[in-house]
Length: 106
Length: 120
Image 1 (cartoon, each protein chain N blue to C red):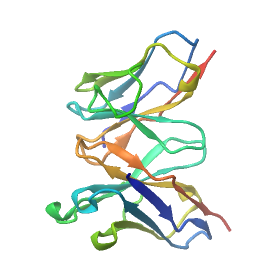
Image 2 (tube, helix red, strand yellow; image 1 turned 135 degrees about the horizontal axis):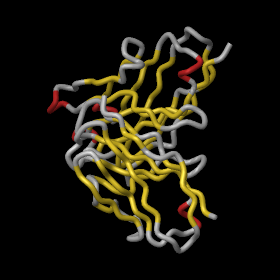
Image 3 (tube, helix red, strand yellow; image 1 turned 180 degrees about the horizontal axis):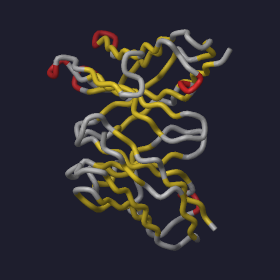
Image 4 (spheres, one colour; image 1 turned 60 degrees about the horizontal axis):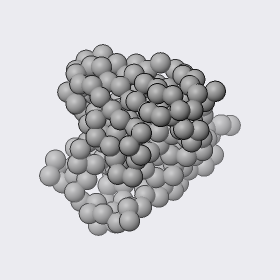
């Protein structure tokens, strides 16, 4: 299975820029997607196919990368962005998720 | 508007079985792959199973950790997908989400999830 590795947690101040990384154990082409999950809620699609903003998602969110290294960037970070962010690949079967990065605001 | 609603969760004794249902509306169900994803309390997301559409002969895929204990199925006439889980263990305790796999192979719509608790 394709293992996706994310750092477990980050803390930033509102107004700053934050980058959340996701590294795949094997190439996933551009088929990396990002989700935001707030406590008590289902995940929400933010970015599809590495760099495309999902409908209704603020332009503060962006994605980049291809192959094995991907990044979700939030600039500027707002208080409402407190959440856990998951990457997920759909190039290789089975679909797999990263362990999630919990973003906290200082 | 796309809607996804899971039902069938609850408290089950170890060794028991459960059938989760996922009813959908607001899109052409026949065109899409459907997946189940679960999340144990305080943990991350774990993909569980996928069923493809008729064009792909309703092919099914399962997480290795659950293979042999889960069966995913769909009823296109009811726009619904199901997950049968047997020989339940405490570690199967989780919220189970039903998700639509979009045309870009992302999980673009999610249900609210249904809680399954395995305990004696």
